[in-house]
Length: 195
Image (cartoon, rainbow, N blue to C red; front, side, top):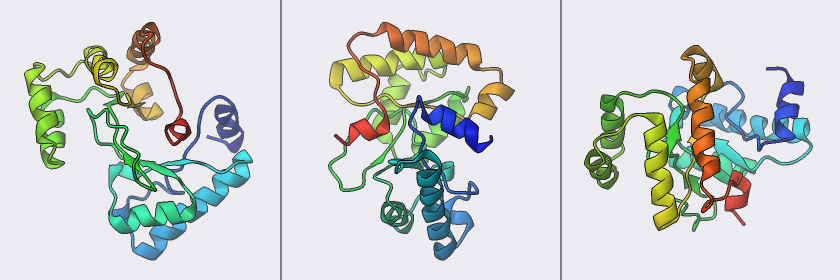
């Protein structure tokens, strides 16, 4: 995408960092990681005319060193790709927040392995008790109800190339319609979670 396209998106949506070259922390050394993150921060600041607030770790992978480099670069909040979470715990100086749903049709096995690998046993049991749902629209309904009932943050994310390649635009539109029909929630950008 050309820089002008990023600027057009930023006029309507928050744009965050993701490193310059989509390098995950385990694919490089500490010095290169710090360079990737700080250069991304500087480039976005120059391009957008304002300091970016949020950063998403490529492949959702991070370490203590990786998180420190992100905070040291100036990002104030990070996201992982941890799924099926509604946590909005921002009690730390540089919060690292999970996500709820990825706009991608994962199999039940993928959800199961993802939750098991991350040690999210309570979430795994809740997901299994909800019939191990994998349909995006029904997952949306389930987790929006959890946010309405218990509080928290529903975070939807996806890669545009996957949405395009797997023809998920209609599903994304259906999710947006479901979200817009719920009056007990409000839409916020990551930066607003900090205030």
